Length: 169
Image (cartoon, rainbow, N blue to C red):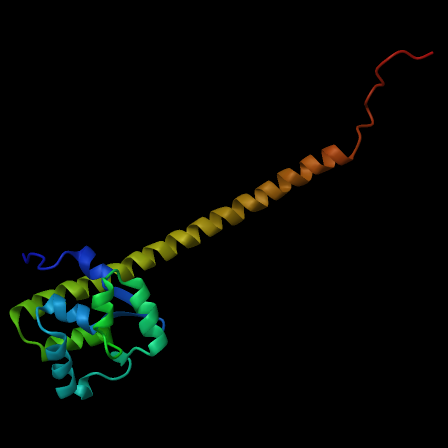
């Protein structure tokens, strides 16, 4: 049984969505793996054919600004970023395990893969729950429509059997 090198919550907090894909930023991955960002990126550059566009891409200026606004760091840390970072999709993170061979990188990579899987399972479960709720709402909406229609008819149509109240002269 393996122990968690990094808490799952930490890994989850390092996953962002860009271009419709869940990704992790090079500098966050480097910290998790216990290497410098420069070392991680050098390993990737030496093995560039392993990282096609759907495994890794560089953020645009706009995406970089969005990312900076999402991370909670000091201004000095933000200002240290001179060029847009590379981000890795789940497949790209899996591929990183083949270019970074340290024991820590392997253990952290396993945890990251499990975290991505767990998040995907949660989304699937939530999607199923959402569909069930929509079905219930639809069923209840239809029933309530019938009830409200019946109430409206009762309010709109005066009863023919009503007796007048009061004295007649």
